[in-house]
Image 1 (cartoon, rainbow, N blue to C red):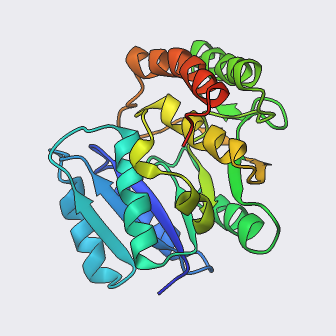
Image 2 (image 1 turned 180 degrees about the vertical axis):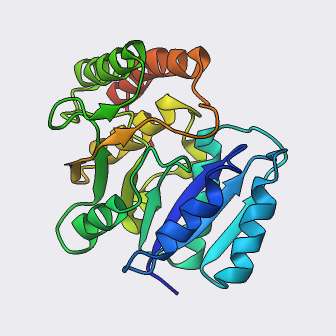
Length: 242
């Protein structure tokens, strides 16, 4: 078994998932993959099952009854990864907005250097986002600036969804107490690791907007982040952050 697991949540990613799995399987570090599918009606789970036959013991699938939220998918994946003994766990999108080749950089920043959490950052060297509408770029960029202001974290890309965790970080976080589901989930995980004094490193990546399939972003997810950050800060002040 590999010591590193890539968790990929999916909902209607039939156009991308098979190619994504093949691309990750071709990388030299021997990544395993766990796909968590939220009841996709387009056959995403069946495509993953076909890949399980092609790559036995390296591809894993968990199916859920419906769209239960990105955060809950990752929490489920984190718990499974810890139970299986993985030393490094990576979050990644299915739609190639994250370049699979960058998995190696995130993994080795934690494995071979002293990072506890490594974030694939869109904003550490400017704005490295391709083919996003300007409104969405500005929303994402200023959301991270807002998070820095409220939380005092130094991270340039606190809402990033391309992240490698050492297992000891996830063990130290009470995963059952993680509250948020969308953008705010990503912030909550990083902020909790930060408050527990884990070392968080950002590596620059180029984020490319999906070419196939539909974005899952909506205003409710963004709104959760805006108000959730204030809640996180207050919880940390009053000693209730887990």
